[in-house]
Length: 325
Image (cartoon, rainbow, N blue to C red; front, side):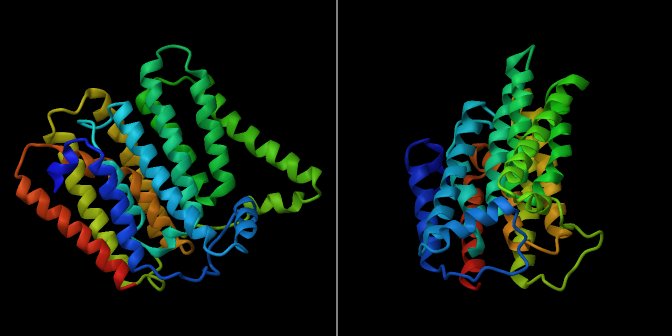
């Protein structure tokens, strides 16, 4: 099975789409949870489409496919993986679509979308050489937009700054450009709300406590533990294979792996210490996990029969979680 995807043909994309369609066979609409925290902007978007039957589901599915395609393009174009591959498209759909909540438009999906655009800008930092100010402006602007759609995005701001320091020798001025562009997005948004007489709603962007400093097990279910275990094991195996076993990883890609580790770490922290948005935020682990797993399955070294077995087990395990929702 994995050899078909390695051949770089359109079969890789078709398999990913078929997996998404297959998951829909067992999909049953779930009610919106009252504990989910929306930003005012996302609430407005959500309320504008909720009166159209199944529109949120259609847009949610299209968004997953868009993100999978965007990640595949970014990784292949910037050679951030060992070889050009469609594995990232398939794995992203598998991991992002495992829970039924991900089939709806949700804040975590928007955050992932903006993170993918930010990663593309960050990858360009290693190629641009001098005067990367415009890229830092782009990164800050995208980060500001992410905050408007997902409250958890605010925790990614320091991670993005550290990532820029890892892949580019950034000066204080460039970091200031990044932070200033974030502020400008929020400032212009505040002005817009003020002009429409809704400035009090702007404060709701920041009026929340999304993270506790202790684990809360009361809202965790068996399916959460199973998926979390799959994520941790897949991340562990794939990352160490990515860093130490693959011989085709460039120094650029190996260095950028540190950024994906940071994204995985903050995503795991948000999931583990989050009281709200639990199922939605499982999607925040998908980007780094997809990158590491892609390199593991794409690499031709090792036993293909074993990788085929792991791939089938992965598909069946994730499908079982959704079937037994």
